Length: 287
Image (cartoon, rainbow, N blue to C red):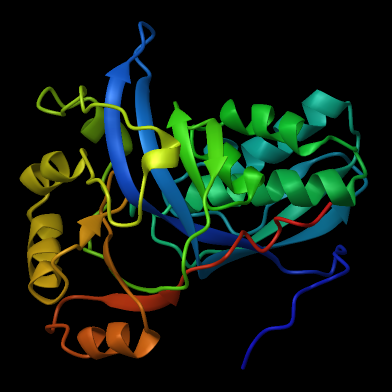
């Protein structure tokens, strides 16, 4: 059943934090400060974490659902809420309830998406009044992928991930496979064998199906599970690739039933799901 769009967001709402796929990801250079210069196309999909918020009068930020192994003070959701407080002088607090559906270390942007949704939601609920461009600048201080989730559009991204040229993408369904491994982004970007000189392309010249993922060979060499899942998926969809720095791999299909037929062939021991591409982030038009 198709879910009706929410038109009135309140403290009682469940706020979505969708996953993204990188339809290609090129490393085109590196700045003097060590940040990598990238080109990629971000596409949102309809698999998402969900966040709820409860107001607090004591000004504290409390994560009611901490992730095992992640200290609350280090969690991106808590850091995002505290950053918004500091930037606006807001004295209100909130208890954060996170229903985590997206795997950590999967290359789907789950933590960044969570942080972006916290900024968007609490900016609205606390009535702190920051415009999206300001929220994007705050988000960039939390992580390179946070601004795109605040931006809210499928987009060609450049720089360290903060310069956007929006793109129209056709409807598609994606089969996403999740190897049972957490791939640390820093380890992939820090690898000496990572290619960092792929020639840049103009956003206006990019077409669906163009490009590859420069991080994929590095992740596959270091994490055999990623290589195994990608090799299997390529047998059924030759254009399959890894998203982000891994571990998830994916393939796009024009129709959902095509993706579901391949999912039904998945060998025992592999896990995956089918998700539909979104025309925009669910909060893209919310203010």
